Length: 275
Image 1 (cartoon, rainbow, N blue to C red):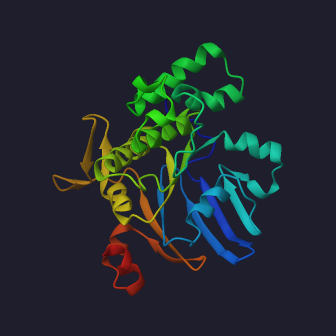
Image 2: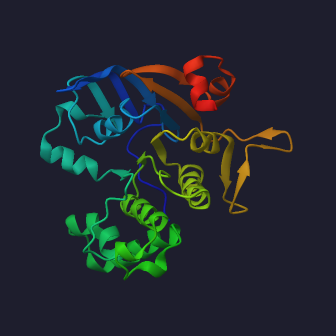
């Protein structure tokens, strides 16, 4: 798969939230959230249900407007964009929904090609592109199947393929391993590692599974051996791609830092995630 297109410099944040607030009838969900994700970085949003993890992803995708504050993604101020501009912008990023969100009446190939069909891409280019991304997730053989004929893990991998069809520089993941067995979960994490370490994809990943975050922090994908490798090998530490944790609580950042800082924390609330 070709490298994703990138329209942001390596010095500029790929994603930037500045004092973002959003409220619904039940009250304020995010209370002045500020953070940055740099190109090629992975930021893990960790927190209990209702702390605003998925909401943050939707805001970053321009699916919801912030009540106040600013959100910039790939150098664009989402709050200043029209709906038509937001539609174009959303084609520049990938979004992997927790439940896959595939169209039940469409085949796998049609689901993956959906964005290209919407953009009226050259028909001669669509099939090779679809095959390429399905090959990447090792599901090329499912082209003509319906989502109902796939396992949960396969549907999640098709969702990843669909997110990659436009070769986005950023992919947003909403609990990508939720509800999956350990072996299938590892397959999904391996795909995310490949995207990060081989193709330089920036990731914002929401999860309540600390083990997923530590897997992304402690391992990397070696493109020469085509294997997942622990970062510490023969005394050398692999630091090609940074991974940080951001723990949300009550609409605010409770913790932000490196994996080793989270693992060493004695804070009672953080230790609940480490048990």
